[in-house]
Image (cartoon, rainbow, N blue to C red; front, side, top):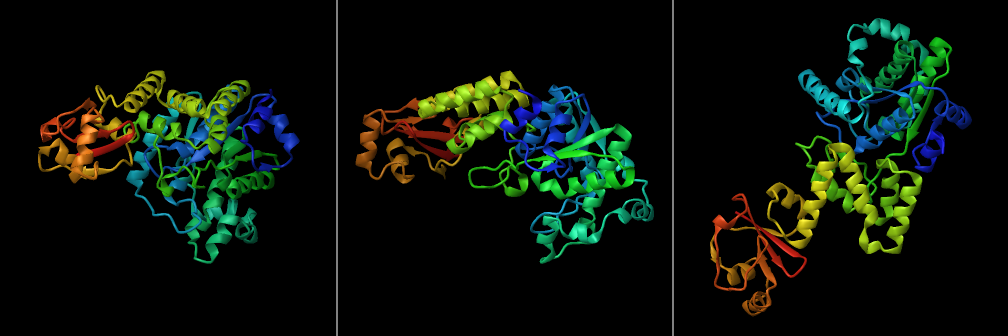
Length: 410
């Protein structure tokens, strides 16, 4: 299977600048430089960026040279959002964010050349930019872009309106300076991408290539992005490897095949075999387990991926020994919780905090060895649950039966 065929099978090609046959010829031809960019709106990339990083690695593995741009200049302006203007972030924060992202890119795409558009924009005067670039792009052309049209009703500042000129110029500059002939990005960047293609054609009389990837959505139709409130950061001090594992292992059956194609480097044969096993025995969740392990392994290494599996299995069994409170809380996210201030006998704790409807029911649970605290089965209803029993001095974990968990916050 050629690179183009593989990308098509994975559903990774949405919009194409030019003819599909030409794009296929370039992708499957001799090595070339391509670029993907992101603005430094945070000091870490998140899972929403991961499909683009995977794309960069796929093209790099095929022999092409990735140029990954971190937008120190465009990040100072802000890419127009569909609803409202982005908040301007300070230059100090922009620089801090760039450093964080650079370190991640070096780790995740080690063959990439890293560039910052602030380097070629900081000394470009406004007048010269208008003369050199602005004269080539018609305002009607800009107004026709989807993201701009959607903002016209609520209003858009000149700064955001000009963003596509800045990103378009990035492509022109990299074409000239790095012989970068292709840009790849998410489909929400289509207007900015085609502006760059047009500039290269008008200014240099050259042909550039570009395509977009479909935006990867969760089952509710939301993007994997921090603006959507569901960000999973690629920096493990912000989001633990286990948290990413836990999120992906809970992927909806309707999305897991798509995620395997987009987020893993498994072959078509491997993915189709895994999915066939999944359909034959859905209860095994082999597709979700494979997806979660492969992503964590790629992001943080095999040791972290294996550790995430271990934590997941321990939590499933109710074995909390050796687990951090952070991992436990991630694994038990969403379970009922309560503040545990008054030390009481076990039977009263169960009734007072909704784990049993009455003392009679609580006694039945306790006598049936159906109640455990921090993984230890307790069958003495008079046992006083003390605050110093809390894990790391923070939480008490009550389990009733096989699946009902409750957390007491000390």
